[in-house]
Image 1: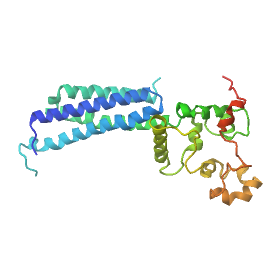
Image 2: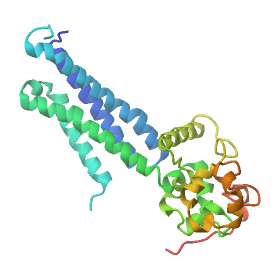
Image 3: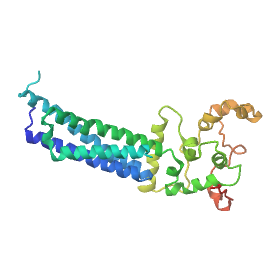
Image 4: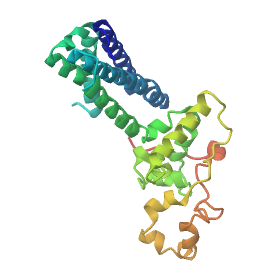
Length: 74
Length: 205
C-alpha cells in the first residue's frame, strides 16, 4: 500500500494530536485527587494515547513501501 | 525536592513539547534524526508516560484518603476514629496494625494473583453506582468479607494461632466456612448505623 507524502503527514499530525490530548488528560488526572481521576485516566487518557501510538505505528508500516520507492514487499 | 509525580509530569510535559513539534512540522521525520526523534516522541515516551500514570494511579488508589474521598465512603472513614477497641477497623487503624495511610486497602484488597485487577473492576462498579446508577442504602461486600483478608496477616501469628477459640475453629476459619466476623466473635466492624452515638478519638497532631 502506498500513501502520499500528504497522507503520511496527516497521519503523523493525527497521531501527535491524539498523544498531546491524551497526555493533557493524564496531567489533569494526576493533579485531581478523586476516584473519577482514575476513570478519566484509564478510559480517556490511555485510550487517546494508545490510539495515537497505533496511528504512528500505522504510519511507519505505510512508510516502508514509499521508502523503497515501490509498493512491493521484499 | 521532586517526587515521582513531579518527575512524571515533567516527562509528560517534555513528551507534549516533542509531540507538538511533530504536529506542527511532520516533515521533520524525513531525515534519520527526525525519524528517531519521532519514534521517541510518539512511541517510547508516551508508552513510558502511560506506564508511569498506571503506576501512580494504582499507588494512589491504595491510600485511605483516596477511598474516603467518595461521598458514600465518608462514614466509613469516620468509623476508623471510633474510640472503642471492640470496633475492629478502628482498633487496627488507631494502633497501626495496618498502615494508617493504606488502612482500607490493607483489609479490603484481594491478596491473590489477579486480586488488584479484580479490585479495580469492583471499584469501577462502585463508581458506576455512585455516578450513573443509585448507590445502595446499605453498602455490602459482594460475597461477604473473606477470612483470607484477616489471615493474610494473622495466620502464623502466635497470638492468633495459640488462642484456644481460634485453635478449636482453625479449620473452619481457614476454609472460610465460619466468618471471623461471626456473631459473638469480631462482629463489630464499621457499625455505620450507630456512628451517631459513638465517641471519637482525636489523634494528637
